[in-house]
Image (cartoon, rainbow, N blue to C red; front, side, top):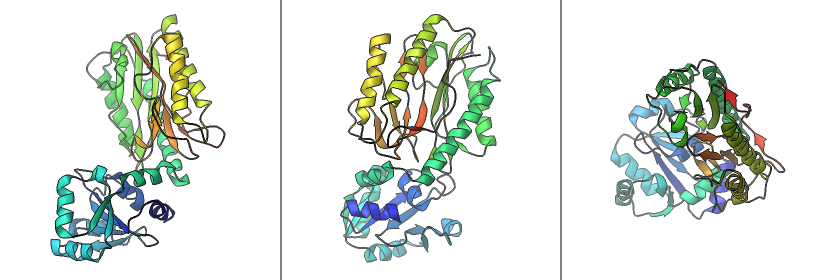
Length: 351
């Protein structure tokens, strides 16, 4: 309710209508209802200031939702039921345009002559600063991810394919009864120089091995990258790794309430340019939460984000030239320093 009222203090609408479906998922629906986004993918949520949220559910979904303490559930059996509810709503209705198709908006307008307002910006502002409960869930997701990563690294051998290692990671994720936050990246050799590489049939041999993975625990994501070396790492790779690590540590030292996110980006980028002659080809990090790329906007060159306490980010400086090195950690912004949610060692590990 605190977050609902915070939203209405910032936005001039009388109520908000949020629709989620298997085709187009609106994370805001799950944010306010706390429903599992994998087990409850469909529904319509109505938010009003100082009032209990209401979820409109079909006959198929009603049995799973009725009696939930976080909201009141109404069964919708016909289009006429929806029409009657819409007519009772106040005039100015907030809609999340970023998760609404043109077809859906046309349907709403055909049902009611209300004034529909895009509130996607205000929803992002409410979600930018995480609650203690959200941070706890992200921390648990990080712990699970690190356990999986530690387990699989001890089993990797030369000759295995990237896809085989990927599948082993997925098996461990399934065993923990959670979901992958995104397609796991297992990148060997020159493939590690492709930031969004798709794990394939390439065999893992001597050289760089990069693994980027995350899980979803009770709707909240983790996102961690570690770079390893199969065999004995040459001095050139060790030097590149130490510079990437230095860039991350230097940027982390700036993370506190009141600092511009772009300042941290510039600090890391300057180190990489000066010592490795390569600028960052992606952001230094992004918001993390219900989405892997969540609110607020992360550590980018042109970010307008000013860091606030309890914002959660990743930080992932990278170097890509012939091979790739990326170190990615998850953190919470504190008043004077970041609170690290990931604890895995950041020294280069030789397998």
